[in-house]
Image 1 (cartoon, rainbow, N blue to C red):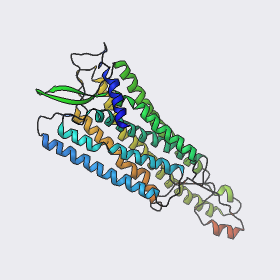
Image 2: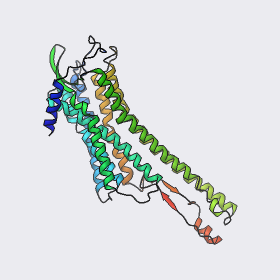
Image 3: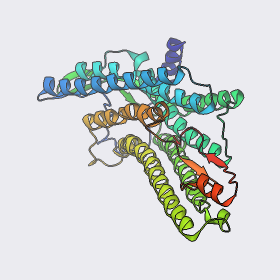
Image 4: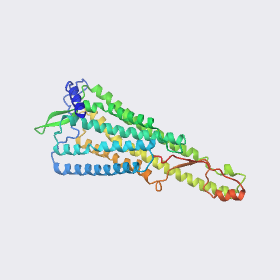
Length: 384
């Protein structure tokens, strides 16, 4: 199936002339090398450093994601959130599966992996990256929905999960399709030697610009906005419920002023700590998302812009290290979205309380003959 797909992509691509547009300055135009990098000095040293870095990232990603999958599957109930988190880990593993091919290209410099690999390498990387980003947004939406609707018990909706996962993978495959259609192996002359590179060849520049904007909007900007809005809503929920935590509203006629003051003070400290902890967690999730994924999308725009700005230098080495930095997200995800689920005692879940003063309510109610009915609304499982 993969072979037939690559042949279809190649057949479509052979009919296209690269960059036939009046907007291009053909005198300064050159194809971008992507992972092929023709080094002139210290080639062995630089390539060895690149190999060690990628190997280290691959090892940590495999250990982290496989370990997180094993811990999540073992003895845990099947709920919506767990399905999306598992999908995130699977997408991470698919993403880092491209590392061995990248290492081989960094050593050979010239592309020797063949045409099918050229079509599929960037396509698979793009699909897995889009699935990862969209899944992160889906997790944030699912958390917001569970918290705002006060789902005290984890739920599993098979049709919803299957529909959401199918949409995530199919939409990612569709928006990433140009990576399969327009990546080709071409021959170039570098330092007097004939080399082959795997590069992107669009039939026209306006189409490339339109796709670049659409792809970035659908697979980065919109998911990023969803993550921000969802986590801001969660934080607002925590802050708004915090105003309901004044025990004097419910025990005004039953406790002394000293006890009311003690309850209010202890309760204020509890809410403040919870708010601070929640804020730090949500801020970490949002910052990690934009920090790890923004550079690669910015670099792709710079690669497109270099066709119009002859003085803009975007090297293959820069692209490589940006991709390596993006790979680091596969190490962070098991920590941010996995560890907090496995160590509940160390990582407290955040709670909303309708009436739960931290002072000694039991003693107060016994001394004043008042029964306190405590209604606890807990943030379902964990925020992440």
